Image 1: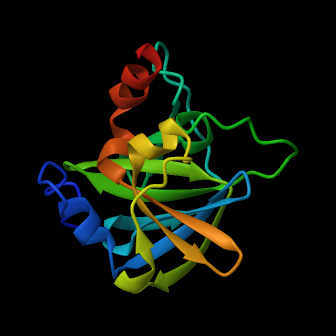
Image 2: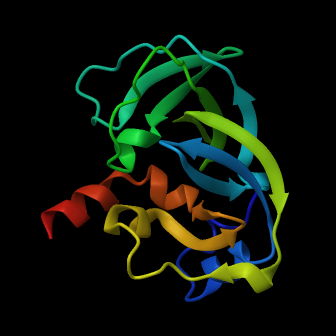
Image 3: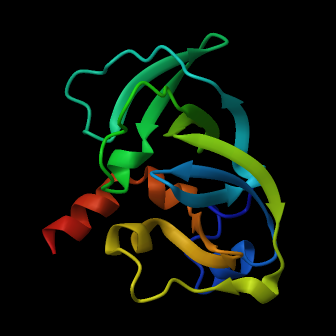
Length: 166
């Protein structure tokens, strides 16, 4: 398991953990994102998701993973991106957070990248505020920007609501 959620409250710790690490890459609305590889439990293809009444809009529902109930989070909705167009079903990246499983619904899962601390940067001021609230920093790759998602903050649905209220 990753140290990222456990150290999130220590100043500079998230940046230090994100710098020079291995990341599972995923695409959402043609944007490249990454999460620390040690936070990933499983990668799943399209799943049957059961809607949960009265759940926040970011919660797409629940799915069954080998007998365990997994909360499915619509990453597009969480990041304020438009709904997916067409019939593409997408994929799910399963993470464990505080003993609970969550499926992050993304468009596509890419490769695992090992990135050096030299190419790590803090969030730029121009990054969308909703993304900045859930990002641990960025990497500038050849022709692309990899936004490192901080799983603990991505799953804290109050972060988005607090940012919207401001």
